Length: 379
Ligand code: G2I
Image (cartoon, rainbow, N blue to C red):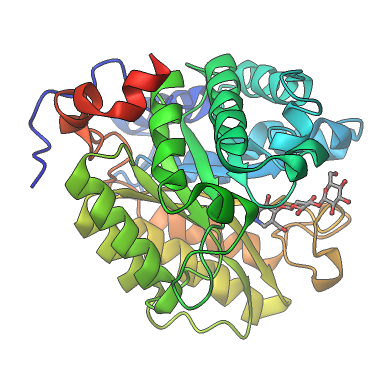
């Protein structure tokens, strides 16, 4: 078993504490001390933004965004004030960042990092390796040529953003629904070790970011989440550097969430953080709000659930806009879903989180990393 008290990966930075939320906490404390807040003896804050509300239990609340949306001031005023974390909807993917072999373009990601930092927001990285949205040129690569391209891509991209990313989705959507590996070009050309090779390369390039495996349909205990669970368990046992699992959570009012929290809990118990990474809920009204509430309550109930990101925030800009899946409508009006999330976050003020916990793979620095032939190759 890997002990969380062994020598930590000391170069790892803890997730940035969002500035605005910290200020709000101080201001509220000040009012309580002077006796102006008379109605509560428990001094429970009722924050009025999602980011500040989540911060009260040490979590973040984020959204996916893209510079292409920022010309709209209604959009940006919500983006800059409500969220404590941003992720690029497309701008940090392989096709965007390395359009030609060895030719990198980090403009989209850099703009996002700059905006986030100006607003005291953390940045999640999405995603270093995925079977989709690869640049066209990878289709012509086989065997070690694809392996070298993948490692180089991770090294350059995670290296470029090093120190600015709270957690990276290192590998995205590599499992089938039955829990087996997806037969992508990555799996076929490189074999079973490609995922751990990607994590080793990401760890070398950005030792400060938490490293996540991210997927959809991990919304309960099922064959697919069993497959991911087995991989994480194996990685931890062998010292492969993995810190977190991203539960995308593309949901609808029909989704079965009966084991949603239990699934978060089992990963947490295994020794990794969990992040809700791409939440959206097709539907409307109270039924939609109930799903958002259930997911938020599950996250705040699980100590190592580090935070929640919605995949956009307004139905005006959503990959599934016709299903009206987001907490703001297309005219930027808050929906019932928004209030459900905010209330659930406020109700959890003061509870603990695992976001600041030491990486589960702390022992990796001492053992596997030194001995790993993969690391030797990269050095
Ligand atoms: O498909 C929803 C999400 C599932 N999990 C991984 C996420 O990365 C993924 O995001 C979506 C983006 O929201 C879409 O915006 O990924 C799609 C690609 O698989 C994105 O769509 C693509 C369009 O299909 C392309 O036509 C377009 O060129 O966005 C591209 C860049 O704007």
